[in-house]
Length: 179
Image 1 (tube, helix red, strand yellow):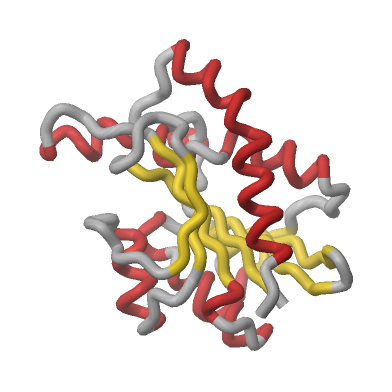
Image 2 (cartoon, one colour; image 1 turned 90 degrees about the vertical axis):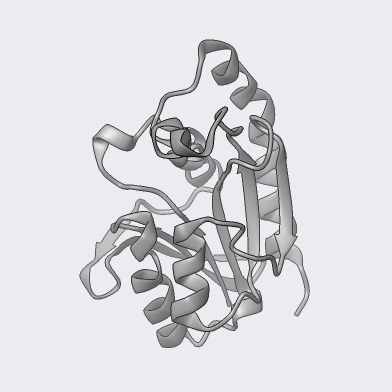
């Protein structure tokens, strides 16, 4: 069994920000894979889809909390479904990558990301997979919050379409990894 988590801030005002970089294409992936629609589960504070891919049960999760509180969804879901940490994929924005660079990575530090740090601290592990989607870094550290909560420039938006298949392939790579 595997769990895929999309880290984001779920409110409309954040919808098209760098923090929610994956938001633009996640519903396309869900439609492409012929999954059912998202259903809110209050005990997990998340919208979820439970499905099967290649005869393996998969839980898709969009926490309905601020990013820093995503562990409130990830922990209870992993515990209830008995999902091992190595079978969790977290998809998130990455300011240490140029815009639209993507990578699949296992076990990595929080690298200053408060939301990832909170997951590691609260769940006592870093042994999970990540798809990191580059959103670039602002000129100075004090601009980071405004930067990740800003919209993409028109030329950056065009690059998104080109990266969509690559991101889908990384998700598929995670799903086909053997235990």
